[in-house]
Amino acid sequence: MDHLKNMFRSSLSELKKGSEIKKSSALIPVIFLVFGIVVLNSCIKDPTLPTLITSPGINLTINSITSGGEIKSDGGAAVTAKGVCWGTAANPTNEGPHTTDGQGPGIFASNITGLSPNTMYYLRAYAVNAVGVAYGNEIIFTTDAAAPELTTAVVSSVSPTTATSGGNITYDGDASILERGICWSTNPEPDISDSFVANGTGSGIFISNISGLTPGTQYFVRAYAKNRAGIAYGDEIRFNTQVADVEDNRYNTVTIGTRVWMAENLRTVTYNDNTPIPHVTADADWIAMTSPAYCWLRNDIATKQVHGALYNWYTVSTDKLCPSGWHAPTDAEYSALEVSLGMSPAQTDLWEWRGTDQGTQIKSTTGWAEGENGTNLSGFSAIAGGYRYGATGAFNGIDILTYWWSSEYSADYAWYRRVDGANSGIYRHVTSKRGGKYVRCIKN
Image (cartoon, rainbow, N blue to C red; front, side, top):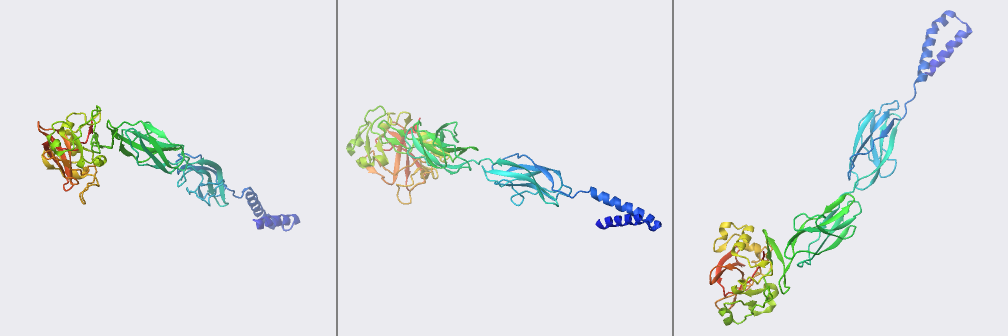
């Protein structure tokens, strides 16, 4: 363009000198052409950076947000790239994390992912043309907190009305734990609209003491933790409260099917009306009894805690042996237990050995001969404690089998259930009411 300007100046000079009018006349069109180009060139501006704005963020989550921008002007040169860039420091650039959302002017949207929860970010739209990179206004946002992650502590120190649990908050959701504790109910999936106790703030392990429970009742418990994102719950744990007899002997209980059973043999020596039960040790006296009596295995009170007491049927028939609100199971109630463990209803009506592995399911995992322990999948926890023979008064079957009284069969006989170490089923039959057998109570 400079050489055209020089030509224009030279032509003007020639005219001024008045030399050769014909040649000068011939130059006039060229002069005006050159002049027009110069004037046109002076009106064209050099390109500049684009101008743009950043869109406000929407759809904010714990790790994403939607933004974008609008390119108001391309600065006189094509926009070759556009998007948004972000970072945890002010004035982020497209040399750091960024999106690429096409070319050209106008409105564009950007989806930002992979963000950290509960973190402040700075974000700007950007546009690139031949001149360089331009940025829109900066917006600031903070991602949502994540839900806490936690586990529920195993329930321990269970009594008739209290228990201990708690939890462990392994992840706070990148936000402060505002409250933590446990909640419980007699229905599954308890939450803080049910009974609960709060145990402070912060992450880590905490212990919770539960009170006000009902004896011999199944409960569900979950730990909970709250941060600004909301409330999260730990895994659900099921447990049963204990039940106490009139002497305050305490028994673990278990829910099998829809019924609550004692998970230990009864060991009271007093009826639930505070009347003492006769204690009979001599064999001759035992076999002559036609009224209530109890004894300890081998007449050794040291067996009380593990095996409980052996009672004759006359003691059970008083209906005062079990704690108030409980009773000795009927034959039909034992059959219902067996069905809940997988025995067919038709088999429950048979005599002698029945079922498949129902005996294994109710036997304890310890206390039987080698190779004869059970799985105790039911929680019934049967221990091999033998029995007292009604005909001789002898203690038989110790460490081999165990019996429990059920309901009356006839004037001289009553139903019982038996499990053996060497058999996986459950035995059903009747025997003399003078026999000494164990008792498991069931809740009314």
